[in-house]
Image 1: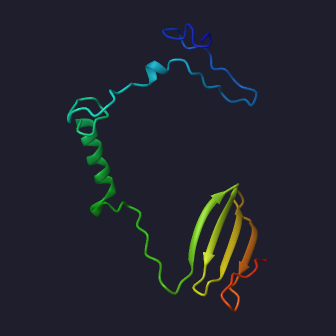
Image 2 (image 1 turned 90 degrees about the vertical axis):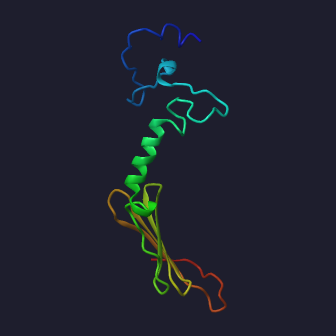
Image 3 (image 1 turned 180 degrees about the horizontal axis):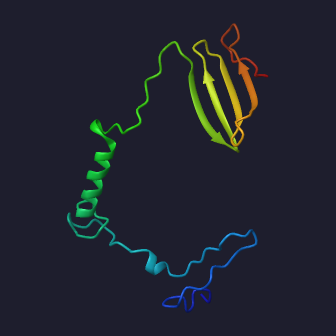
Length: 140
């Protein structure tokens, strides 16, 4: 292609800026950026850096095990939920923090906060009906 012609070995050109003011990404020089590894199922200890028996991978595995701590549980542990307490699930979506709380009686509450200002935008609650069917959402 003409866009890649003359890129290899050439001095880096000035970064191009797009209409939105961000730097445009160029595909030139990919051969230098990526190292291709042999395919197939090579013999153990084949010697290339990505092989699972290579010294680099062994050292990386040892470092990850050290960081994970004893038992491989990692540094952040989470307590199991207690049977009589509400369970909460938090997520970020569409610039909002959403907290979905499920109560032991089957009731639910969803709170949505603005991601930047932490202002409560929506709170909706629903409780199961007498026959166990899900009720309608009540917006506060």
